[in-house]
Image 1 (cartoon, rainbow, N blue to C red):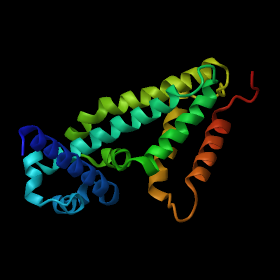
Image 2 (cartoon, helix red, strand yellow):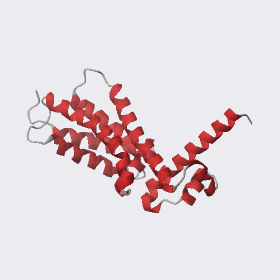
Image 3 (cartoon, rainbow, N blue to C red):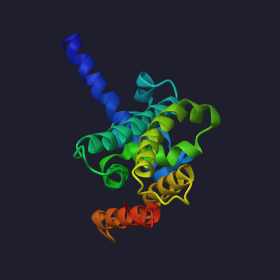
Length: 204
């Protein structure tokens, strides 16, 4: 086996371990995630994980970092694909849909990041704060544009409204069951609630 082939196989195995860590984190949380469970999902021997990561927390750090990056990237891509003349309130609906699809179906990493960051020790949370701020800034810019276009209820504080919206969207990961209802139904309900909840009484 050539050195390049060995490196490629090693990189694939590392990604598989990180993916497995995200899968376990979603289901068991920070405290319940064990390397033996990660190894079983990744189909590697548990000691082999230490070839790639010095500790359990280093592996969890990586899984959370990938999730935060993926969530921001997928939402940003959905917004970039929208027509440039679309009103911000409609772009906000696109972001809602992209966030929910990423969180609930596209990525164990995104769901792991949303669920796990509040459970992490303070030192670990601090390492992910900038990535969280960067993602929230995408939404903050959207809400600011909604306000600039006159579509935001002037009685609402934009920052508070945004945190309520993101909190509600993130909470869907705790209760949504694909066996009991379609994702499209959840997205439609969320878009309607966000739009109607933020909208100014009189549209310009």
